[in-house]
Amino acid sequence: MAREDTPRHILVVEDDPNTAEMLKAYFSSQGYQISHAAWGEDALKLATEKSPDLVVLDIHLPDIDGYEVCMRLRSQRRTEHTPVIFLTERRERMDRLAGLELGAVDYITKPFDVQELKYRVSNILRRTKSETFLHPVTGLPTSVLIEEQITKVAQNPKRSLIGISLHGMRGFSNAYGFVTHDDVLRAVALILRNTSAELMNFEPFVGQLDTYQFILIAPAGEEGSSVMERLQRRLNEAVSFFYPHQDWESGTCNGGDPLPKIRFKFTQLPVQDIPKEGGLGELRQALFAKKKQA
Image (tube, rainbow, N blue to C red; front, top):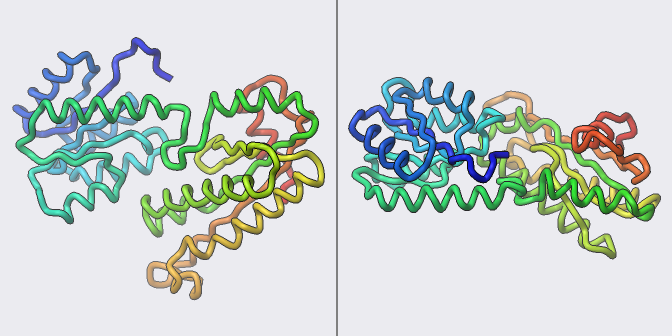
């Protein structure tokens, strides 16, 4: 995580030299760290190397268009959640929808008011900073918030941890796109939260260790096993709703390709088996590298 005094990093992807110079000079004067690329491929390389906090992305570029750049940013682990603002001269509704469907957080048409762009940029960066400890798609607690809960629960023999890992999502995303992929993650998070709230007599905690790894604080012993079985049943029942009905019935997609199946694996971990050292990395190993999966 960046230190508080580290300038936020904006990657400007713009091939018009006048617009690019204006944006670079203006945002540098506002205290931001600025990188610039005039070509889409160069932008992708810079984003991978420098991990910007925000990308201001022109749609019209000399090599690949901004939509392709955004799609490839979303497909890379390091940049999959980096906020993107599209800059374009297009005003048609379908063009805006195309950008938003790819995960852009905003869409500004040229000529634009630089003061308006300034406020939009600062609002987005402020929001992403406040959401650092929450997963950007599901809103579930991550990292530090999970560690705080694990520290508390490790002293309570009446509790256990349930690990839920999600498999097959890469193939699913390739077949149905990033928007549908994120819809599945949100649905899984909602099912975990709602089901745990129904079944437990204490305030449930559901966290997200990684994009496809979830953790739930549950009762110990047989009661926790019962919670795990109910979660497994609810999630498996929901899987068919993630697919177009025709694809699910036929078992194929994209004109005949095998259906990319989503699967869940579960592990229950007694609190006495929580690793005492190693942080979340060791916890992930304990939950998801063991053979005792349901």
